[in-house]
Length: 165
Image 1 (cartoon, rainbow, N blue to C red):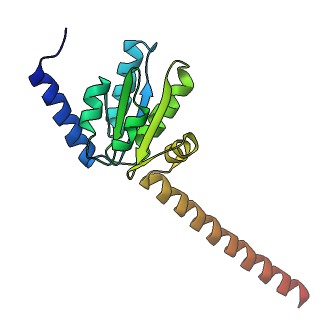
Image 2: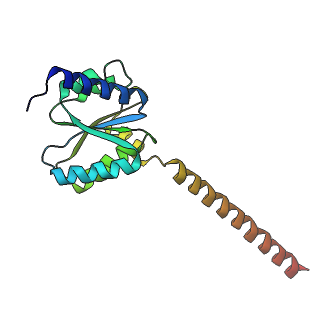
Image 3: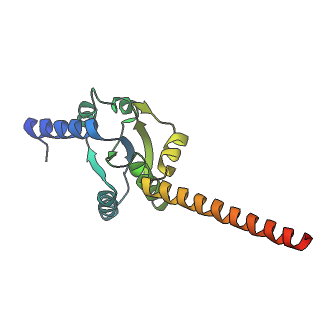
């Protein structure tokens, strides 16, 4: 059923509002992926703070106009599925990357971060970027290991000194 002009304007304004507050955006071609799989992806996305929608290319192009995601216009073609990362810049990219590993038909076609169109390598780096919690955990692990290393070094130095005296 075709959309009337008012519904199209509403969709464009919603996309524009999301584009103004989102940290990053990833687009993919979802043709050939079942509705159930897309629904599972959306469910996972909601838990990660990712807003997703399948939208007509013309409406998406109008929605991202004059935003930092306008650079994505070059990549929009076919069936476009867009994910906006609202809490962590790499959430959408990580979600799409993991989903594309399980579904061969699902292809990431582009991403934008800080007003720049990303290459496939940069999209992978964005997806692999640790979240705040993951970064804190890594830092604590490194600190713990360095403290343990110093303790072992100190104990071995004491042992050597006792053996030589």
